[in-house]
Length: 250
Image (cartoon, rainbow, N blue to C red; front, side, top):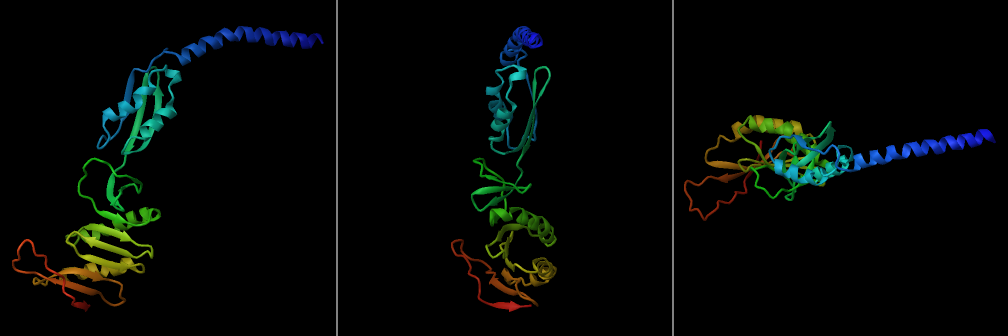
């Protein structure tokens, strides 16, 4: 019984002694002690400005070093347009350190959003952008389309062309529109070897100076179906030449 009383008395004394310490610490942590004075930012600053970062961070810096809410700052910065990843930490005695990664836009995605080089889909910005290819396809296949683009773009560049439009439909059939307007239907099977064969023959196919190749269907086992357009010598600006219906297999 005496031992139990001594234990209670000891706990009571410990609580009394600890209370002022807890009160002092709470005052320092929750108040203005050790205020945040410096903001260190590491970012590309291609699309996100320093002013945007300062605006997102400033409301959370009115508390002391130990009371700054890093999670809240992280959420605020993540909501800034063009921000893909952000890391926030404190540096003693008065600095907030921000490391930020921006989206790098690769293409317009389904006409309403953007596809980043990293494969992420993000909201269309209000700012003007350089001319970008247009991708159309299911969101779940965004990274697959990115891989296809990265693999085939060098092939087209070898013949002086680039990808202007790339689409993958619900049947997983591929279609490309090139920088000169040539449309390629590649189907969904054996796409890579068919495309490689077509590109190897394309310089020879395009030698016809009187006509312009406007469409190629690569979904044939042993050849291609081609559609040509006549090249008029001179036409008024308000008249657009129409494709011929001639097709040929090679």
